[in-house]
Image (cartoon, rainbow, N blue to C red; front, top):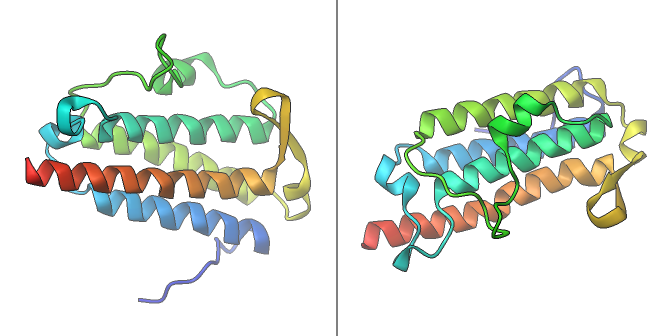
Length: 170
């Protein structure tokens, strides 16, 4: 197997490299969660005080979807907001989830990754330097946003790996 950072043939060079980071990390995430039982997907760690894999998968999909609409400079449609959101609950925590199958979570996330791919096919390398609104009145380049999607995914992979370790020991 050869590992490389090249995107799809229809993507500009830098855009393709950034997309390949997103795609590679998503494929790695899917391999980490493969074959998880429902009990493990819903497991919240010792003393049930951590976010479950289900919560983290839904969170990642929602954040990535938010970036898609931020980059497109569009408001996320209400039906997608309801399906993937909210970002946080009334206690400023990831919303509670239980009983949602891995297949459903990954199919929903697959749809978001496909939206990112479609978006990257439409972006030029020059557009990557455009600024978009980011949290708390800040701005970010589109280039940074796509990198952030990949980085955020990898960050939560560590949490899921830890949950898997705890689950196997329980």
